[in-house]
Length: 489
Image 1: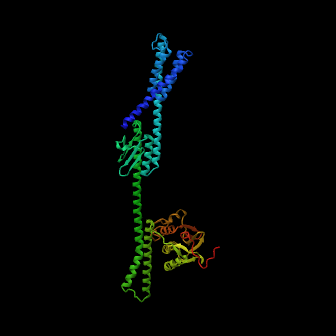
Image 2 (image 1 turned 120 degrees about the horizontal axis):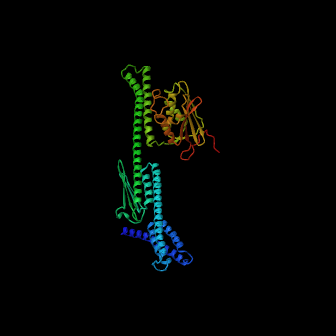
Image 3 (image 1 turned 120 degrees about the vertical axis):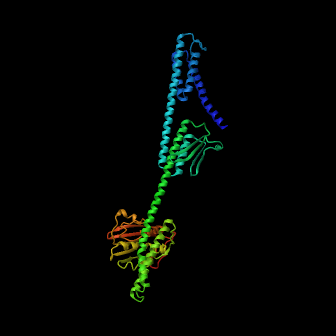
């Protein structure tokens, strides 16, 4: 029933052009009849060509040729003597009528063809513009949902569909109801497969409330579907490539981690094994000074292993987002003193200088995590700084933050490496020259940023320094006053 109504509407639209043509010719004829005595017959024939050209230009060849035949009859009836009859008595009038008919029909056909050619050129230009707009939009898109949305907007602009469905194979369907009528009760007016060389990617289905889709519209829609299919395939290939790249990088990181960890674990385990074997085999008396050194070596290497395992656990927590610092008010000097006490044996070949003001305010930090930060920074400084050089720890209150600096007299780092030294496994020095898992500085960055601060590295005149800041406020509250703090007015 709806299809019949659409066909009737289409026929009425076509018929209205002929009705307007008849009305326009009648109006012009009435005007010429009033001026008949003032105008020559040949001039009237020429003037009749003007409305015929306009009719053909605006309403097409059919109304133009029809208007030419109607004008031929009205011209004969009203302007060729005897008036108000189709009879022609003079040969001259017959020649005029014949020439008029030929010229009128020729002009109508010519103007009609020109108009049709203009419409075709305009349609092709619109198609090219729409294809270019779609291609430009799709080339910048890498997401399937975005591609489908762009395609749906372009299809609606072309077809003015009442309902549009885009069904992607292996994905959710996209449905766009554009009319209050339930058009899905009948089959779609047009179904376009989205096909590529790799197979069927989906299908586009259209329902219309206006006249049927024209062949040129269908051709354009099929082209749009092909362009969208290629964009979808490109997006899926890019996603596959990204996943493959991520897996490759993950495998590479795992290989680096296993190699580094196995190398790092072997040294302390060898020391522990050798010391334990000596004590167990009674090669060394328990009462001798050598036994105390062996026990101390076991204890130190066990601490080293504990740091390595702790770094691995901290790194996994940082990457999973599970590192949640338990921030409480702590005294920074106590944290530093605890770290220095634990590292006194590994730092005995360097001079450690601590410059922490007595009135330094409390800092809201996780005690254990901040110990890890200082331990990793000091370990890095001890690795790279020459023996018998100074390593300095300084802290100052600057505005709403505490600024801490750990500096050493080691070699400076090229500026292009300063930003990357906090990346996992990144080293400026060759791996065979400096031991370590390559995770220490990455863990420092994760912990400091989890506290709301930031960390960076910089070259100083006599060496190298790590600098990081920590906020002084805890949930907007300032630190409690120390007894030696000056009173704030």
